[in-house]
Amino acid sequence: MARHVAFVAPFALESTLRFVQALARLEGVRLAVLTQEPAGRLEARLGVPGVVVERIGDAHDPAQLEAGVRAASAALGGRIDVLSAILEPLQVPLAQVRERLGIRGMDAAEARRFRDKAHMKDVLRENDLPCARHVLARSRDEALAFARNVLPLVAKPPAGAGARDTFRVEEVSELERWMAQNPPSAARPLLLEEFVQGEEFSFDSITVGGEHVLHSINEYTPTPLQVMETPWIQWTVLSPRELDDAAYADIHAAGPRALDALGMVTGITHMEWFRRGDGSIAISEVAARPPGAQFTSLLSYVYDLDMYKAWAELTAFERFEAPPRKYAAGAAYLRGQERGGGAGRVAQVRGLEQARDELGDLVCEAKIPQPGQPRAESYEGEGYLILRDENTDRVRDGLRRAVEILQVDLA
Image (cartoon, rainbow, N blue to C red; front, side, top):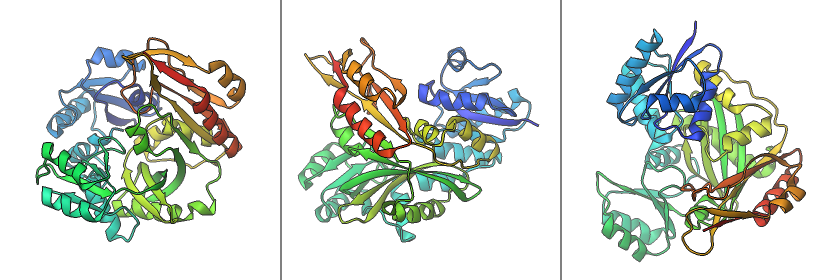
């Protein structure tokens, strides 16, 4: 009997469609997509026949989601077995609808532990797991009292995602000026946390039935917050082939414990963590979703496996068998440099011939910015290269050269 899956995709973003298409093409699945897009537009972008499309006004509204799931159930001719999405802001409303309709999966309490970053850190600290000092400030005085003892720090909304909506505070006066325009309150609290200085990594995991069956590590250069603060910096992420290095022993111990404490049962998670200058680690935050920014593609390349299809099978049937890790892989993100004012569109990409000569045998995927292309709104930039090799050092050196050689001019 086919599994009836409802997937929520508010908009037909390219990154989202890869997951939707993987579900749509999976044998034994009948798929409905809940979206804010016109049905015809989404169907055309999907390019997979037989998918039921239900349009709703607001995908973040549990009541509208519930109505959409009920309509999808009627259209598919049976109850919905799986309700899923990859966007982090949808995790709590989806969990609420699962509870209302008796659909198996993450419940609302579990979803909030992942979504509310202040609550998440409380849970981690209660379980003696290393994380940054923090406070959920509901008043100006509460925020200032914390800031006077913990500087530098970062400020973010409690339901932020990664480095998005995050800013660094070096002096108390900076926080005072910001709060003059955005005063924290009980209704709109402000999450303040220690600015952990050091190297930043991710720890991406796959869990099946409470068993953590796969872990992968990525190294960021530079840190995501530096990337967000400096729009022209071209950044890289490396997924090394070797994960049994002693340098990773502490996160291999803490990472699975954190997932247990937060209540992960089945799914893919993306954890961001730091190594301080003194060698200690701190977990920054954990998201109960597949990683973005080409990280899922990197998982595909290091394991020589279609990770989008693997995610679909995990989502629909709760099955996944971890393969051996065969390669190192990494992504270099190409971000435009403003030249001549305006900076609205890509003018040219310099260094393409040299990059082909030096890196050609390492490149397994590329999105080269095209002249006339609008400036990207995302920190991922206007394009990227993905490199792969059995030798981690070759990939690391190739990523460094890629961002040195390739320059995107905006005008």
